[in-house]
Length: 598
Image (tube, rainbow, N blue to C red):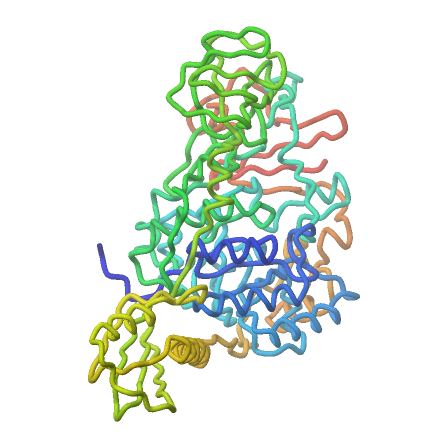
């Protein structure tokens, strides 16, 4: 394995404090969590008290806590955001993930700032600008290829964060306005109604229907587990798992899976993870997987049949009668499993009441054809194992006990080479029984429910007779002092002042999502002559693109215009449902598609 000098970070999502702790226990080096307000998931807010408790837990292991403040802000919200940032800084939050550049014009402390992918970090000019401004980290857009990431790494000094797993938004980050246009719910405000997960139809300019009531825009989930070494070599610093609305079993499973893939590299966090289960992402929520555009333009990026989790294919139906099924499967099924199958273009679900080998009795009669493929989207046995057999994270230490003039001197050194010494105030008698030394060694090695795991313990000098209660008291003091010393030694990253002299574009159009005066002032400070207000503020009249995406319906249908003449079709195409119709424009030179409001 090639030696990597920098430390690698595994970044996991946390809907709440319990899930945040589960992520850390399963190997995350950092977690990102929503604060009391202004996170990009409105349903995933957390109190300052809970965030403070998560910070304290994470810092034990030299892990970090990032708070998402990645929505655009109205003028009336800036004062509240400023106060919240000060409070988050005070409780020890390590960084904020932000979208609105107006935050840079607020009076805030030197908390580290990360440029959210919502700042549309897919354009090299934009990324260079954010880097030269002084952002400590840039979260790259999911659309980028491995070669683009390599090129960006050569251009910027900031840390680079890349998504490696989870749901994919079909739009380029920060550039989707469908939800706002259709429902008055802005994706840039954490209120996305997910129109991309809805059914749509597709027709050409002559009314020829190419697709009817299909999930045309619903991308499969991202899974870059096969490319971790390539991404590390490319210079990625942080590997991010998406899923701030996911439950504990999902986060624990996926985090542990990726932890195992990178545990042999130098890591940001400390501690050894002992898992009570064997991780397998296919056994958690997923819409099927793809590597998106990391190594080219793949086929089958969407599952047109359903936007829901189908889970893992388990085999085909051999017989079906009433609520009894005979299956051709090598999987072990359990009572309580959830199964699903596609029928007439719809996903149907059933629950297993009784599992007996490859025969199952379901909770209701099933009319399913022989040969139908079944999927398990809820694995009862696996979920129970994840929930009940909790993973543990412990900091490895070694203890040396020395007899010195009748006193016991203890020295503890942890895996980060943090050291603490403690000497007893009491002088002890010499032990008559030489087996007392083995008792002392065994007693010192037990760390109980602390965050430490003692791997080695040595004793030097005369064996002393030390009552168990006194030895336990000394050991507790030693471990408490070591944890305090670790906190003193913990690296804290502060935000350096931003460079106000860096120039950007002279014309800032509505795609920059400017909805407050501070954001406008920011762009003017950096050379803008004109700054347009964002879509959420004005609605932007006329013909505009409501979504830009690298996903192309033509390519998905095998109709790429670079390869096919498509003489049987009349352009433009239209995306429509019973309430809305949008024109599709294809920029084949840039391999991009736009959803346009007429």
